[in-house]
Image (cartoon, rainbow, N blue to C red; front, side, top):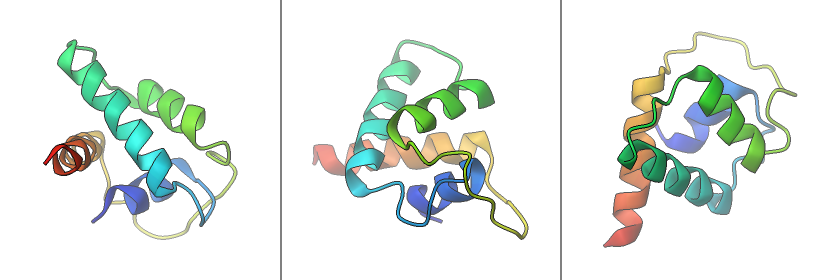
Length: 85
C-alpha cells in the first residue's frame, strides 16, 4: 500500500490528491510531530491532510478500508526517509 492511496481512502481526497508535493509536506510534518512526541490521533491526521489537501472529506470510496493510523505513520515516516537518502 502506498501513502497516497492510504490517505485518499482514509480521508476522502479527490482522485488527484494527494500529489507528490502534498505527500512530501504531510510526511515532513508527520515526522516532525512524531519526533516531538505528539500523538498522531485521527483528529490530528484529519487536520494535517485537510491542511495540505483541500479536497479531503469531499470524496467517498466504497469498499473495505484496511488502513489504520499506525500504517499511515509508518508510510509517512518511510516517505521522508527515502527522500533523505
